Length: 319
Ligand code: FAD
Image (cartoon, rainbow, N blue to C red):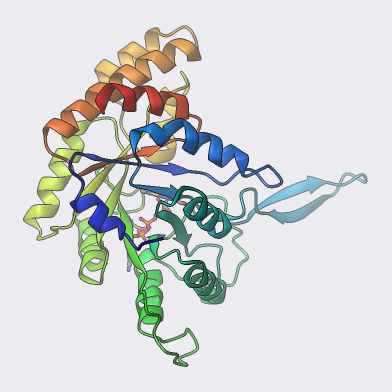
């Protein structure tokens, strides 16, 4: 496959580029579930496809004697293999998410080696969700922040391993995007603090930023203005999710800290069931995307989890 860097595909797209994120199937399920989503959205000419990454979670299993056993399970393994399978089957860049929480620095290094062998060169570098992370893990084995992971990838690109040993730098270095939060990351004391670290991400090599999902375009526009004023010039790609369940009215703000504007919330409240919520979700998403396109966003990146039918309806309306 000819190398097409994601940043070049975004910058050279003749219209607002379309891309989406998929989750690896639950452990033991077929990769066909991933292909089914891609096939559904293929007609909209995706420029690249992201694959999320998930660390092991710990749960307590009840044993026959009534006691509990702590077990670690990785519910959705396989991001690296899925990225490679997608590239080979669809001849399109696949972007695996590399997270540092729950993956040791050494495991990350092996993943980078595998990805290089497989010809997967575009990544999204993230810290990863920490809510279900095993607190007993030895913190010294893991990076604290996405910027620390970024240093590892940059060093790898230059031929330096985690143990300080050196190797011939790979012919094709990894390029990557990183995450940002128009409504502030939940742990950040304030937006200015988030932007401070965002500038580090960009200064140290992030080609572009992808936002957390948002439902209020004004928040995105204000965030982009803030970033530009602070000298962040890379594309800031809106992450878009159509609401598909009535209870997402309260769940999405809780999990992702994304506000649902009152006109949208009012419509969702009126829905009697998920079918109605899905219709309202698609309508809101279409309006959101139309306005973003009209304002010249370079690209729209869709979160498809539970929502690939809705994403298809939205894409049909806007492309
Ligand atoms: P960071 O950039 O490390 O930021 C985390 C917090 O620390 C922020 O408050 C930031 O301001 C602050 N900070 C950053 N750098 C420093 C520093 N050097 N020192 C002190 N503070 C710092 N999660 C998954 O588990 N798997 C996925 O596949 C996944 N995909 C995602 C895709 C997108 C587009 C987005 C937006 C999020 C995704 N997430 C995923 C969730 C993400 O991992 C969490 O939101 C996580 O809490 C933060 O990730 P980050 O990369 O933004 O972290």
